[in-house]
Amino acid sequence: MEVDGLDFLNTPPMKTVRFGGSVAETLEKHKRGDSSDYELLKHQLTDPEIKDGQIINWLQEFRNCVTKLNKEHEQLIYTILRLPWVGRSQAVVEEYMAFLGNLVSAQTVYLCTCLKMVVSHFTPKRVTICEGGVDISDSDDEDENLAKNFDQCHQALQLIIRYVPSTSRFLMPILHENFPFIQKSSSTLECYVHNLLRVTVYIPSIRRDILELIIGKMLKLDVSASRADIEEAEENAAHNHTAERQTEEGLFDMDEDMSEDRPSTTTLTAHPVAERLDTLMAVMMAYIKDACHINGLFHADRTKELYKDLLSVFDKLILPTHASCHVQYTLFYLCSFKLALTEAFLDHLWKILQNPSQPAVLRQSAAGYMGSFLARAKFIPVVTVRACLDLLLSWIHRYIDSQDSSGRQVCCDISLHGPFYTACQAAFYAIIFRHRAMLEANMKKGLEYLQSLNLERVVMCQLNPLKVCLPSVTSMFAAITRKYQVVFCYTIIEKNNRSVLPVVRSSVGGDTVTTNTNPLDSFFPFDPYLLKRSGPLIEPLYQVWEELTDIELLSTKSGQQASKEEDDDFLCGETPKAEGIVGMTPSSYDSSIRSPSSVGSPPISHQRPF
Image 1 (cartoon, helix red, strand yellow):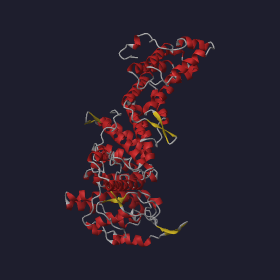
Image 2 (cartoon, rainbow, N blue to C red; image 1 turned 90 degrees about the horizontal axis):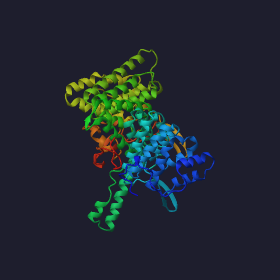
Image 3 (cartoon, one colour; image 1 turned 135 degrees about the vertical axis):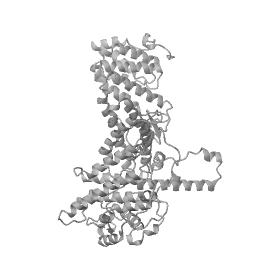
Image 4 (tube, rainbow, N blue to C red; image 1 turned 30 degrees about the vertical axis):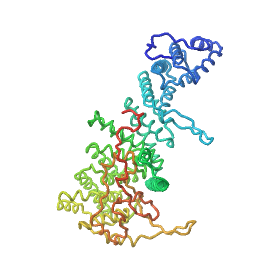
C-alpha cells in the first residue's frame, strides 16, 4: 500500500483488514472484564506480516487514547514497542515517533521501556544461521539500510529527550546493559560504539560516562590480547599465507584477474580479539578527530573539553590497568593535535608521580607513562623533553638527598623506593630515545646539558637504580652515556651482576633456575603499536628506535646480549614478567608490513559523522 506523501497526521485512519472493535472500545471492554478483543488486538500486533497501513492505523488509534494506557496495560505497550518500525516507510516512522512522544509525555512510567527499545536498535538485527544442524545467532551486518535505521533511532531518542529532559539520568544504565558481549563480531561492536558516540553529540552531559563505558570494554579486549599473542598470530598468518601461495603456484598458474579479486588480509589484524580492538580504536580516533575539528579547522574549546573527559577516564581506568597495549593511544593521538595538550598531559603525570599521597603503584605507572610518552611521541619538541628531564632529575636528586640525610642505612628496596626507581628508569628511557635530538642541533651545548643532569650521582648512589631497571634499559643507557663520556656505568653493572643470585624452583618437569629480570614489574605503555587498521594514524606521530651507529659499544661487560637485527625495535614486544629469564629479542616496527590506507572517518558505510 502506498502511503508516502500522505499528510497522515491530519487524515482519518486507513481502511485495513482487522478484527475486533476500535482500540478505545477494546480498552473499555477490557476494563469491564471482557478481554477477548484485547487478546485479539495483541495477537494482531504481533503478526510478522503486518503492513505499513495497519501499523499507521493502530498507532493513530493508540495516540488518541494514550492517557488510558496506564501500568495496567504494560503487556500491550510492550507489544506496541516491539512493532517493526525501523526501516519502514517514512510515514510509519513519523507516526511511530509521534506515538512515542505522546506516550512518554503522558505515561512517564514507560520512559525506560521506550529507551530500551530504541537502544536495542543500536546494533544490526539478529539473524539465525544454521550450520551443521547448529543454530548460530549473530547480527546481520550486510543490511544496506543500517545507516538510515541508525538515523531513525537517534531521531527517536532526541524526540524522547525533548519531551522528558531528565532522560539522561535513566539512559546510562540502559547503555551499559545493552553493550554487546565483547566476543561479538567486530561489526556489531563497531555499530554500537559508534552509536554511543553519536549520543554524546546531543547529550553532552553523559559524554564522560559513555567514554568510560567504551574504554572500559576496550581495556578488556586489550588485556586479553598481549603483544606476544598478537605478534605470534601475525607470524602464523604470514607463514600460512606464504604456504598457501606456494601450494597454489605449484598446482596451477593463477590468472591475474583472479588474484586481483581476492580480498587482501594485510589490513586486518590476525589475532581475533586484537582485530575487534583495532576496529574500536579506529572508531574512537575518528571520533576524537571529528570532535576536535569543525570543517577541518582545529577548535580549541571543544578539544579542551574532550581532553578533560578523556583524562578523567585515563585516571580512573587506564592508568591503574597494568600492561594495556593500545587503548592509551587514544590520549596519545589527542595530544598530537596541540603542544598545549601534550604539556598538560605531562604535567598531569608529573603531579601524580611526585605526590606522596598517591598510591605507590599509581605513581610508578605515571612514571612509566611519562618516560614512554617522552621517548615515543615524535611531536614533543626537544625543549619540552629537556624541561621534563629537569623536573625528573631534580626530584631524583632531592630524593637521594633525603635518603642521605636520614641517617639510616640505605639499601636497594623496591617496596620502599618504587617511585624513585621508576622515575630513574623513565629518565634513562627518555635519554636513550631522545639523546640524538638533544645533541644534533649543538653537540657542545647538548653534552653540557647532559652533564648538568649529574647522572653519575644517580648511578653511583646507594639506592643503585641500575640494579632495578630493566636490563635492556640499563645496557643501552650505559652504552650511550659511555659513548658521549657522560657517565661510566659498567663497573656498577658488573658488580650488580655478581650480586644477583638465581632462584631454584621445583616444578613437575624438574628444577628450574630463574632470575628476576623485571623486579619493578614495569612496562612501557607506548611500545610499538601493532594494530593494522588504526595504525596509520599513529605511525607518523611515533618515534621508532634508531640503532646506534656504534652498536659495538654494547660490550659484553654489560652482561646483556645486544640486539640481533638492526631493524629491530629497542625493547622486546612484551616486557618481561617479574619472574623468569625472558629473552630480550626486540620486536619489529617495520612500516612495510603495515596497512598503507588511511583511517579517517569510521570505515564502514553504515556510519555517520559525529
